[in-house]
Image 1 (spheres, one colour):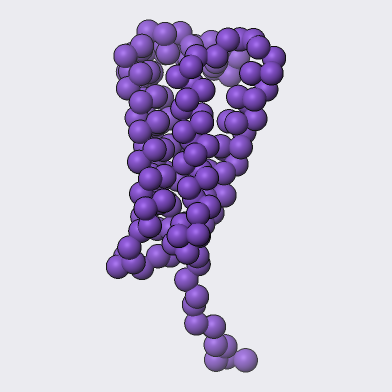
Image 2 (cartoon, helix red, strand yellow):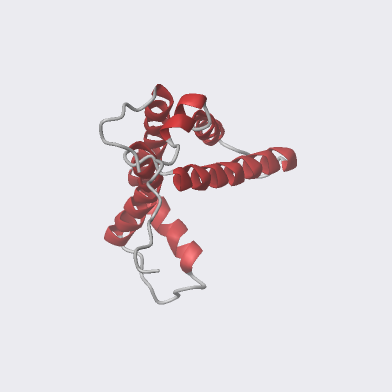
Length: 151
């Protein structure tokens, strides 16, 4: 846990800004295409929950849940300096980049330029978490050893 009085390095601020910007852009873009997302969610969940009817409201709830999932590791890193969140973000980014490389190698389906740029920005944001200043920010606070009084 990070002391609340310790200053955050620029790389932590930049990571939070980029990650939230990409997440917010995806959220707003999805809200502008609610009909398309409603159909996509119906297709994705047809086998799991065939009787669930996706309405406009439920689509908004699902999209906000996606945005919240982006916000959780950002908050864990920016507010608390949680080292495990850096590992989690690194794994997610790794799989995004592998998927991007795989799709580019196959050539199908054609990728949107915006999706490629967002993925590269997330890769850059993840790399910022490994700068020396971010490493110091995410360093675990040393605690006093626990003394055993009832041995």
